[in-house]
Every structure is written in structure tokens, then in C-alpha cells.
Length: 430
Image (tube, rainbow, N blue to C red):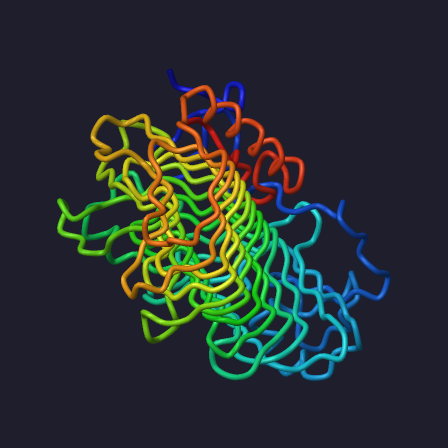
């Protein structure tokens, strides 16, 4: 039986085409992000890519030009402390920011409008918050490769936030070939020179890789990563938290000529591979291999596959996993880590063996771990002779459905049942 969380929602096997009726495609004439979270301050600076000009005052009736044009004109060089920049809808260009701010500078969409960026990079800096943006190479004059969004890659950066935004290569991937999926640009890079970076409530769609965390002490929460052909989220630095994301619909496999072994969430040491990673939390994520069995180029996905430790002080809890691969939750060479209250299930007969919860090893270093309260098709803790294991039980479809429904409701309560820009439900069915 197939479960639908959202009544009367259309199930889109590929792409994000509109569901019918008069609804506009997301990122085009969608409603955008309104002002419900925080009001626009009276001294906000307005930017308008159509009516604005570099000689404007930035007032609501005398705006600056689009964001890239305002940066090129030097208008962001001396912003007031704690300023808010409000972007009206339209083409804001290829945006590259830098600069340290004593207080957070906010760049946000005007209520009900959809500012469109070709690409976004914050090269270096502190305390930038961007909200309600639609970012895609489809707005550019020519395609490009690499990442659509890059934060903190070039030089020291901290307290950078991208939230409530929509990042995609193209809206409709229904005609994509295997080669198209493998050549797609990737979504968001939290860069190697960053610390305390945040990606929140952002949808990343039709990409090669979804999100890469190469920054320290960073947070990826409440996002939707859907339609990807490599890994959903990569964790490669200490102190990462990956929480309440929905990761779903993976494309192309070994059988299609793609050698990448796809993971919903993967962990390894940045720029090295095997090596010590510390203090990572993976909490309350939903992982769905595919929502529609008619999806072309369907591929198995390893759910939470952390094979390249040692992994010290990891917490993996309350995740709900539906995949056609045996790796449900697998931590190799884990030390002092906890695997608590996860559910790993398959509904696909080709998943042999079926998803397990495992403590594995490559280096013989697993020690002192706790595994408790999980549901899976099987369990293997042989790598850790000191493990504390209790209440790990066989999974059933009823358990999956109950926990999936509850977690989807929790995520909806925190971040909304539908994404604020794309308008798409986070979970259509399983």
C-alpha cells in the first residue's frame, strides 16, 4: 500500500512541474516568502532590478538596482549596522558578496515577490543572512558547472545563513538523460574556510550532489533535498548537525554507468577520506529512496552510511529511513557514539539484504558505543565488543508508517508542510 501524507497532492515522479490548474511553476510567479517571520523595518533598503538605479536612496519609492548591480556599484560597501535589504522580484544577477559585519545584515525577499539569482557566493565574511531567494543557473545566459550556492569557501567566514530559499538547476528534469543527471550542477557548498554556517528550510532540486558540509560547527536543518544523482548531504568536518531534513528521490546507478555509490547522508574526513571526525549529530531526518516506482533511472541509496572513521561522539537518532539498500544506519569505527530510536525499512523486494543498523569496522577501532531503541530488518554490532545494546527490534510496515507520519508532522510544525518558495509538499508519499 502506498501512503499519501498530503491530500490531493500530485505525485511528481521527476522535476517540479506545476500540479495543474492555475498554479504557477515554483520560482517563477510563486508567492515567495511573506513577512510573517519578521516585519520589514522602516529603515530597510529596497532593491529593484527593474525600477532601481545606483543613484537611488534605497527608499521604498527610490530603490537601488538589483543585488548584483548594487554590489558592482559599490552600494553595499558601507551598509548601516544591522541593515535589512529587501529585494523586489526579478533578475538580480550572479551575486558575489564579501565583508565582515559587526551585526547581522539581512538580505531578504520582499513580501509576495520572487527575487531570482543566477548564482550565489559569499566569498568571505561574517554575519550575512539571506532569506527567500530563488537561485538557479536557468536564469543565467549560459549553463555553468560546480555549485549553485557557495558559502565561506575562499577565506575565513562565520555566521553565514541561507534560509527559506529555493536552489535548483532546472525546474523540470522529466526529459533528462543519464548523462544529464551525471552532469548536473551541485546544490550548496558550505565551504572549507567556514565555521558556524547555516542552511535552513531551503529546497535543493535536480542536482548532482545536494549539500556538502566542509565547514566546522555548521547546521543543515529543515531542508528538502530531492531529485539528485550522487549524495544528498555530505558531512566532512567536526561539529556538524544535520536535522529534520527530507532527502528523497535518487537517480542513476552503477547499472547506468554512474560509479558513485549514492548516499542520502555520508560522512568522511574533509579532503582526506578516512580519518577522525568528531561531534556530529544526525537527528530526525526523513530518507525516501523514491516516492514513485515509475521514476526513471531509479537507483538504490545507502541511507546513513558513515564508513570512513574513526567517528568520535556521533549521535544518530530519530531518523526514519525507507530505502532499497542494506545500509540503513551504518557507523564504522565509531567510538563513544549513540544510535538511538531510528527506523530503517524497505518496501522493495530487490533490497537484499534488507536495511540494517550496524556498527562496522575497517580499522578495528569501534569501542564504547550505545545502540538502543531502533527498528530495522537486522542488526550487527559485532565490531564493538563493548557495545551497550538494548531494545533493538524487528521493523514492520506499521511501525514505519506510524513513525514516518509522526516525523513528517513534526517537521511540518517546525518548517511548514510545504516549502515557502517552491510551494511543494515536503513529503508526498512513501
